[in-house]
Figure 1 (cartoon, rainbow, N blue to C red):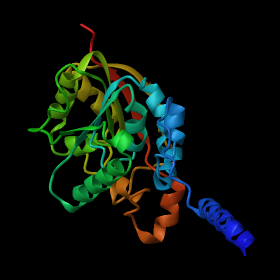
Figure 2 (cartoon, rainbow, N blue to C red):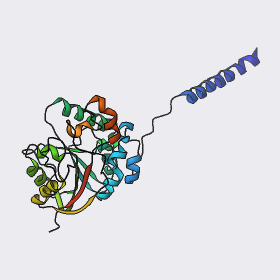
Figure 3 (spheres, one colour):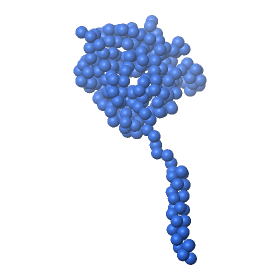
Figure 4 (cartoon, helix red, strand yellow):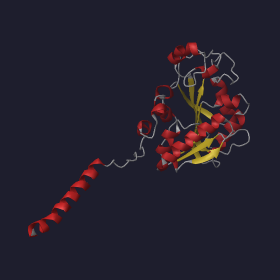
Length: 279
C-alpha cells in the first residue's frame, strides 16, 4: 500500500503530461501571415492575392505592366479608382514597407461603386500589415481631384478609366490633376481600351482612340516617353452592341455568343507612359 501511495502521483503526472502532448499535436497550427513582398515578382505571386484576380493575369499582365512603368518599392504611388482592388492586392503589400500607396476612390453613391468599395475595404481590413499603410483620397472629376499633395507622387496609375472621363468631358480635369500631383520627372501610367485608329469613339463604347489619350495628356503638360503592346489583343474586333462590356470579365453581350466572347478574351488595350517634365 505504501508503494502504491508513493507511485500513484507519479503515474497521474505522467498521464497528464501525455494528455497535454496529445492536445498539442492535434491543436490547429497558428495562422502564419505572408511575408511582405520585396520584389514585383513576389508581389504578383504573393498569397495576398485572390485566386479570382490572379486568373486575369494572362490578360492584364501586371508584372510586365508595372515594370514598364518603372515601379520601385520606395515610390509614392497613386492609383486612380482602384474599384474592388485588383491592383491593390499587388500595390499595397509591395509599397507597405518603403513606399506609400494612395487609393484615389470614386465615391459616387450607386450600387456598383458601393459594392466595389466594400470589397476593397474588406481586403484591406483582413490584411492590416499592408492595408493599414494605405491612404485614401477622393477622385470625382471635375470637382474633387486632389488625389495627393501637389508635387509629391512618383507615379500615378490609371487602368481602364479614360473612357469614363471622356464620355462626360472630364478628361481635362483628370489629366490636370495627375500633372499637379506628380513630382517633376514623375510618371503617369495609362492602360485603356483601345478604339480602332480610323473610327471615332465617344467613350460610351468603352473604347478610346490612342491618339486622343495622348492628346489629353499632352494638353495637361505631359510628354509621351514610351508605349507598349503588353496589353494588346488583336482578336478584339471592337464592334459589339454592348461595347467593351460584351467581353470578359463583364460578359454583357448576347448570351448565345458567350463562347465567342470568351475566346476573344479581354479587350485590346493601349499601354502608355507619360512623364511630367523635370523643369
